[in-house]
Length: 239
Image (cartoon, rainbow, N blue to C red; front, side, top):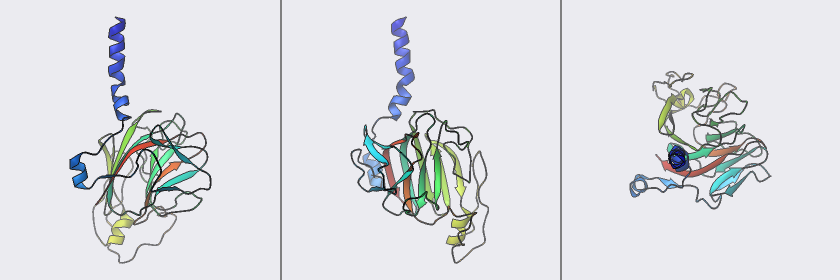
């Protein structure tokens, strides 16, 4: 009976264990344009935006520590796909930014943030597009690896967690900037932008849209001293 219980426990732990393993790009993925932007050993190509060190390498993972800090991948991107494994501790808070211009010593104020939060007091949980689409419950637990897979193409963003599509969001500001009339739609929570009249210039940045930008960086968030986010298997494909 004891042996049966041990075997059953081992099988129960398999999904979480597998999610934490190092992944390698296949030959087909490389041919399609996928590249790794984190080597598992150094922060080469990345830069924190605060004076104090906020990120270091632990067990092959980018790991956050201390007070507010944002680790920017130092290449500006337009259309892309990103796959990244994430984990957050109990009570921790973090985020994955994209299309965010570099900012020194402050929170990113343009672009988008995908929340990373399973049990922090902030009611906006993992999967949420901060200030736009909100999930009240995370699709993962504390200290549990999960995979964000996002596609940004034109004015359209698709967000997946662990291969499940959560929503597709069509950004009205991006649509206006690109002069199109694409339809908008979102998945389970919240809503998305509706069609916007063509425009030849970018709408002015206001309180309502100040987080929006056309191009920018990917950035990882270290939120506060009680938060310990970890990231690994960071794969990028430019579109």
